[in-house]
Length: 525
Image (cartoon, rainbow, N blue to C red):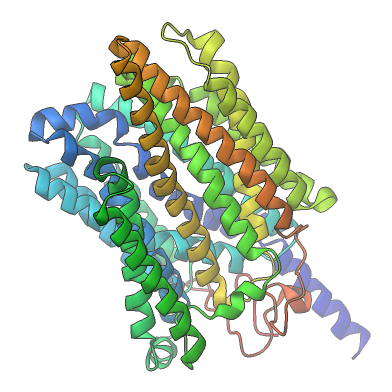
């Protein structure tokens, strides 16, 4: 190879690495972070609007939970399928389908005149999110080369994920008090319109014949088993606090879900073209990173839920005041995410995940001491700030570790697994901690305590359990990959970003920007 060719290759590699330094790279990152923000935001934005929704649509107390749970059910249930479809059909195509589905469901939710229509809209909205989330994350991990660009991109993406969890409560209170609860759904429409325009301008598509070829041997049985098992598992977890953990319905639902998922694993081992190639779990530390996020999100997400109930039901705060209480959290998350993404090249991701989980646990355990007559500066703000630092660090570091060394043709699957862990964590955390809170509150009622004292006792128990889950996440994280942004060697798999950041021949990239002949991110080597 001549010296001119070497220099030319070096310049090409440098250009790929610094995609984030270009205007298109920055706009692409903003687009993908907006997609993630929408998905996470809608997990929590309806929280503080629930009383208004219940009054206007005449929801029963038991059915009201499905305004929240319906979204979590289909979001978690279809994520694995959504991630693999992104790999098979093309990530832009799946992302567009998800955004359109999400927007139409948001419109229907805002127009709903009955409980049944609103719950149905939330179910469909969750399906849209399950297509958007893995497609968006896999576009990110295949568009930004491993190293400084991807660390920065994932740092911003992780910060946005954490910010959305906190911002959802604030925006829900702001919109429901200043306008109407219906705007917690309609606010999605202009954002989705902008996202659709940006997707077609910034993200290249894939040739239809290539997607058709991949679908000829589509693993339909695997898709049915995986989706059915995930839906049933999330549904059983959501219903468990009301139905009871020891009831035949709960035990039967969870058992059937396990059997379906076991059958899915057997099918994947035997079929020639599996929906989810099990070889992906040979990637060092990927499974541990996913389980860490599951445990961590169970703790963090549940903390927001129970602390909001405490603010409104015990302290008597309005929806807007409760939402505004989380504004300092957004600053802590942003700062922690930015610092963490710069630490990876020195320490790797593992120490950041462990330290972030323990920091988050310290903040949540501080909040578990909430008194009946709590004050914001003394009893809430310190714990929220400490928790926000841990949340920002964990989101960024786990996302980076779970995507390190993943081949480009499995990026959607890896993203689906990561997002599935997140949603399963949310469902699992709320199910377990709600049962603990309810049991403690009922015990205190039987002891003759008034409602504020009994409710506070239940919330304290739930927050204590959330902190314990975060400590467990720190322990599991010791098995996660210690990625520093470089490609990790895999067992026979060509990592995305290997070969100088380019996917090896045979793993084609679909990301050619519209109107450009220059590939964005990985290219065929």
